[in-house]
Image (cartoon, rainbow, N blue to C red; front, side, top):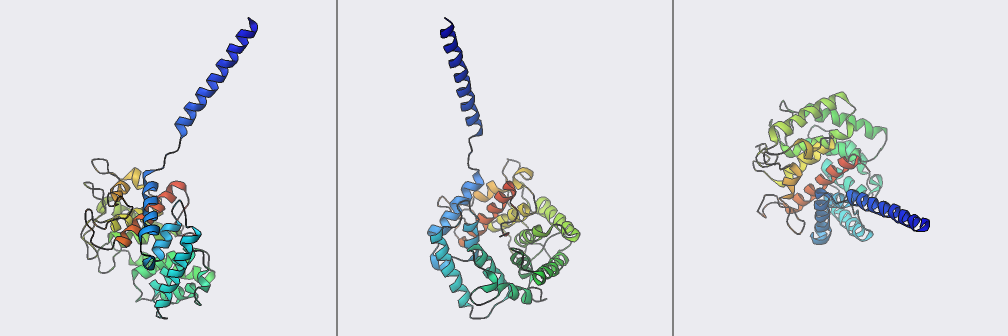
Length: 319
């Protein structure tokens, strides 16, 4: 009798343990977030469907920062292609050429101070701070020089560029490619750069103004897009949404928690509406006009920046 009771007690304990284990496993079973699913589709499209000769630095960044990373086979394709594109410039380099090439170089694991016989860091230092270089050159100059620590001269140049970008901010709190208005895209890009240097008080103030502009003026509560009618664009589009999401994420703003339409649509949910079933992104909803390659690049790495925020990994440009 005692033996039978002991067996029953043992079975009861084992059953309880197994049941608890099953319940616990069910509660904690990981599901892939919707934005990660979209990233994977976007990166897969870039690798599989974009013509190899068209793959550029931004494609390399998007693939490198995806959860699956860059395979050795993909790296070989990118290395060859990026080198060819740099060579095609035939020695005529603007600041943005150096910056784009540097981002591509670090994305494929190359040393940008010894790239195709050129020091891309030195090239940026010499060209980006110039008054005629344009706002995007200054923004991406900050980003490129901040991918790694390239020394005292580079760090001093970053400070100069930060000062120039902060000074260029308009009274609305944004930045524009041209004119005095605000462009969503350029403002988002500026936040990506400033977000890498939030310790400066002037940068913090500029970030606050830009965040308020994107959240309170640009965000459309009817659709979930970010729109400011300007010379840059007057239509809701994937690129503007992507740059706003990337910029806000880069400065620590969780758009999926803080911004929703009246019907509950969040910025990333809206951005995913631009994505085709094959992973490619449209520029405009329901249209194949515009640069779909750029739309796919920007949408993919914007969500990668958001994913980095959730994983507390910082900027996608930190290498």
